[in-house]
Every structure is written in structure tokens, then in C-alpha cells.
Amino acid sequence: MPAYNEAAATLDALESHLARHDGDAEIIVVDDGSVDDTAAIVEARAPAPRRDAFRFFARAAPFGSLAR
Image 1 (tube, rainbow, N blue to C red):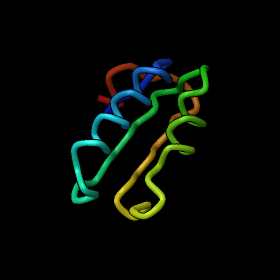
Image 2: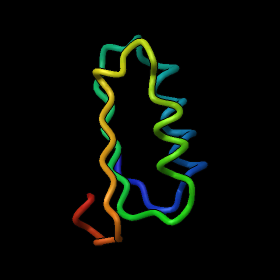
Image 3: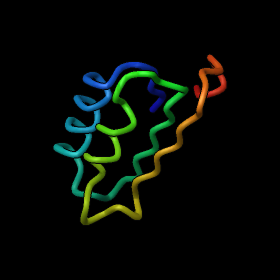
């Protein structure tokens, strides 16, 4: 899932995914240089029992479509 300055929407998407799946899917979030608190929210919400199925990648500066 690409993310750029969409902390609330990204959190909603993660919550929706976690509510529908029993931890049987991998979650990959790519933060393309957000300047809001997207990274902190995503890392705080990583599913504790299945952290091995959660991947978060962040870029220091936005590079547009490279994250997509």
C-alpha cells in the first residue's frame, strides 16, 4: 500500500485489513517521504502477533510514483 501524508487514511486501511484477515496475509506499506506522522502511526499499529508478516519501507524524501 503506498502512503504519502495520509496518516489517517493509512491507519483506516490497516484497521480494515486487519479486521478482515486472520493474520494470513502480508502487509506491505511504502511511505514515500511523508512529512506527517504516517510512519509513526503505521509502525505503532503493526500487528504484534504477526510482525513477521508486516513490512514497512520509508523514503527520506518523496519520489512520486516510485513508491507505487
